[in-house]
Amino acid sequence: MSITERVYARVGLLGNPSDGYFGCCISFSLMNFWAEVELTPQARGIQFIPSPVHDLLSFPSLNEFNAKISGCGYYGGVRLLQAMVKVFHQYCREMNISVSTEKTGFQLSYSTNIPRQTGLSGSSAICCAALNALMKHFGVEHQIPLEMRPNLVLGAEKELGITAGLQDRVIQVYGGLMYMDFDESHMRMKGHGMYERMDPNLLSLQGNPALLYIMFADCPSESGAVHADVRQRWLRGDEEIREGMLQLASIAKEGRVALEQRNIALLAELMSRNFDLRRSMFGDEVLGEQNLDMIMLARSHGCAAKFTGSGGAVVVLCTEGEAQAAALRLEAANRGYCLQNAHFSRNS
Image (cartoon, rainbow, N blue to C red):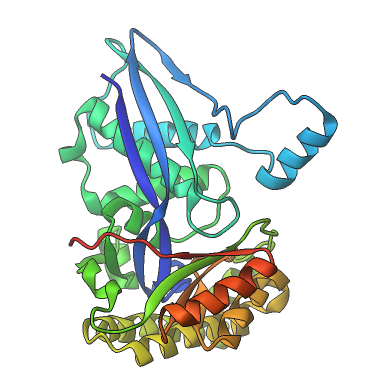
C-alpha cells in the first residue's frame, strides 16, 4: 500500500527570525497550501520520481523554458527528497534504529501547491512530508521523538545549503498553533527547544471583527541572502543585532498573552513592531522593494502586517473586519498581489 503524507505551509506570526538566534516564536499551519509526498513500496532499491510540474527537463521552446526557469528556478523538489532520505538513514544508524531496504525498497514522489519564493516554507514542507512517509514505511515513528524531528528536517535542508531556523520545521512537524522557546541553555543541553501547543481557536479571535489574511505576489522577486550579514554580526556580538533578537523574542512572549486574552489591538501593535525591528536590522535592500510595498500597502489601509518568513508573503491583521480587507484586496490585485483569508485548523 502506498503512503501519502501531507504537510501544510506555515505562517510565522510573531518572533521570527529570532528562532535562529535562541529566541521565541509563535507560528501556525496555513491550510491554504500544502506539499504531499507519496511513498510506494517496491521489490528492491530506491527510486525518486521527478514532479511533472516542478522537475521538467524538456521544453517545447526557448520561451517556455525561460518562463519556467524565471518562475520556478533551476531546482525542483527531488533533491529535497534525496537529502531527507540521507539524513533519515544517518540518524537511524546513529541511534541504532533498524531500517533496511533489503526486503522492500520504495519509490518517492511529491507534489506541492505552495507558491515558490513566498516565505511559506515550501521546501521544509516537502522534507517533513518525506520524513513522515519514511517513518511510517519503516514503522519507526515511536523511535524518533517528536521534538527531534524538526532537527532532521532542518538537517536535510542544510545538506543543500538552505539557511534557516527551526521555527518552520517545528510548526510543520507539530501542526496547529505553536509557541516555541529556543532558549540557548536548553537547546545546548537537550538538542531542541521547548515547544508548547496553543489552542488554534485563539486565531479565530472569536467575538471580534478582526481577521487574518495572507498577501503574496503573483510573480515574487528574490530578496537576496536574507540572513548572511545579520548572522555574522550576531556572531561577532553586535549589540544592535543581539538586542534586536531579544526584543523579537519578547514580542512572541507578549503575543502569547495577547492571543490568550484576544487582545486584538495589542496583537496588531506587536505584529507592526516585529516588522519594524526586522527592517532596522536587515535593511531595505535585503528585504526587497516588493516585500516592503506589500507591508506599506497593508498599513495604508490601517492593517497590521509582517513577513510570514523571510519575505515574499506577509500576514495581515485586518482589525476592522471584512470591509477593510475587501478594500485592501482590490488595491492589492491592481498591484499584482493576491490576498487570501488565512485558513487554519480550529481544532486543538
